[in-house]
Amino acid sequence: MTQTRRQFIKKSLSLGGALLGSSLGMLKPLLAQSETIWPISKFAHLTYQTALKRITGGQPLIASTDITLTIPRIAENGALVPFTVSSTLDMAESVFILVKNNPVPLIARFTLSPQINTQLSARLKMAETSDVVSIVLANGHYYYTDKTVKVTLGGCGG
Amino acid sequence: MSSIKIRTKRQADTTQIRTLIAHPMETGLNTDSKTQKNIAAHFIQQLTVRHNDTVIVTTDLASGISRNPYFSFEMKGGEPGDKITIQWTDNQGNSDSQDTLIQ
Image (tube, rainbow over all chains, first blue to last red; front, side):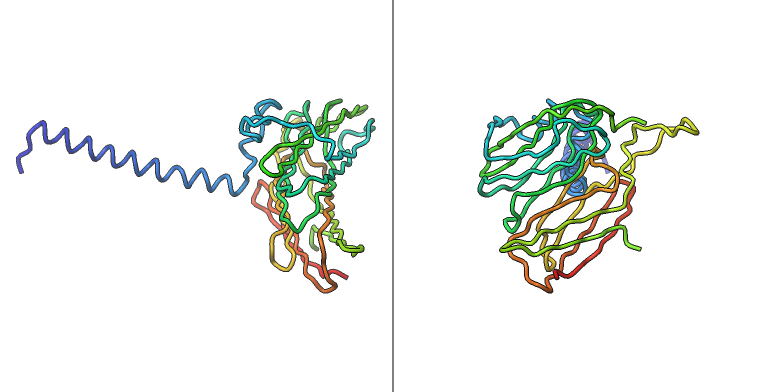
């Protein structure tokens, strides 16, 4: 089989393109998969501001009085700070909890089915005195409320 | 023995689901005081709550949740004999699941 230089280049280009296309196609489901395994992996080790941007996707955060964040004002032990988030917002889909000054600000994301009332509690760790922010996604808008918690003994180190 | 304890409590028209999980929840930022070595991160990444095999809550967690995590949720409805299943997976690939019937 004789092949001119021109033909060869043409062939290799199209082959390369096909390979590139397929590898891009492969990459997408791979990314999607890792997100389904641990969707907040992309938030881990981000600063507060960047994590916030990733959560809202650039949408504005609306301060809301319909969310109640119950958390002690002074936490003696930062390793164990109990909190409760409750909200009267309709159609709440997700609840995010962030601690502004923690090494990993994002604490948790709760994805709620309509069968669940927005009333949940858990316990978090705090490295130092910081604002604790709870964000509720309802009807496609991000509402938030925050509270400052004073920590007398840090919980993330030693 | 399972690492998960579940308590349910029926109220007027809701059911409270509380759970306590035995897990170290290491952040990966601490050092062992004896060996001066870094303690590897070991924390629950995902926790799902099912009511009669329908997912009602999915929780994606980071290392900022306290050791031996406690969670409480409030579910609408709930009848005696309904099954509540709680399952977790951590970043080292371990997982556990436990179910209980609403009293």
